[in-house]
Picture 1 (tube, rainbow, N blue to C red):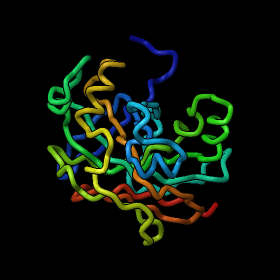
Picture 2: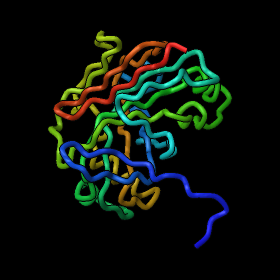
Picture 3: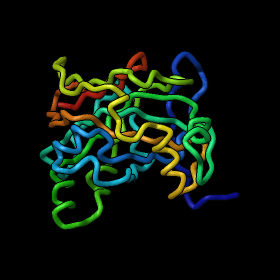
Amino acid sequence: MSWVFPPAPQPFLTVAGLTTHFPVRRIYCVGRNYADHAREMGHDPAAEPPFFFHKPASALVQSGSVLPYPPATNDLHYEAELVVALRGGGADLTPDQALDCVYGYAAGNDLTRRDLQAEAKAARRPWDMAKGFDHSAVIGALTPGTIPPDAQITTHLDGKLRQSARLSDMIWPVGALLSHLSRLVTLFPGDLVMSGTPAGVGPMLRGQTCVVQIGELDPAVITLSTE
């Protein structure tokens, strides 16, 4: 097979303790999956089922990267999230079947251009440019297996605690999220699901370092360039 131009490199995540890599197919994100965050954004956490949006796989950033401040925003926010990595897939899965598809978990940071998101919400337009911009999915190394359901999730910005919750605080746990998503699209190996952020989101400025930690998982660390 010949190509008009060389295909893009395969996005991937490293796997903690292994030399193999996890190829990434798609990145799904869940909105308002912690009640306190839903309330801080002005919404009723009991009013709706889970909803989803995309980040392109090309938005993936390895932990430890230094990034330029993204264009077209003056209000870049961090959002700590548990990332679920799938080794299997299917459609119309039960929660138990969906959990059987999970390869492992990682810490992630769903970077968000909050001002663009607010404009999109006000105009009833999609969030794509607020969520799916270049370098917007910061994800640490994957840890295969399971994770304690009450593991702590935290964000530290320049060493100061900004977010703190338990995974058990999620409105929709992982199995239920994946099951619901599988009724909307067919899931495939290589898909990632960023499972929502707790309360305490806020701005990240040039030169600052953000560390997302979840239990014993490798952290997701990002520093913004001063330029």
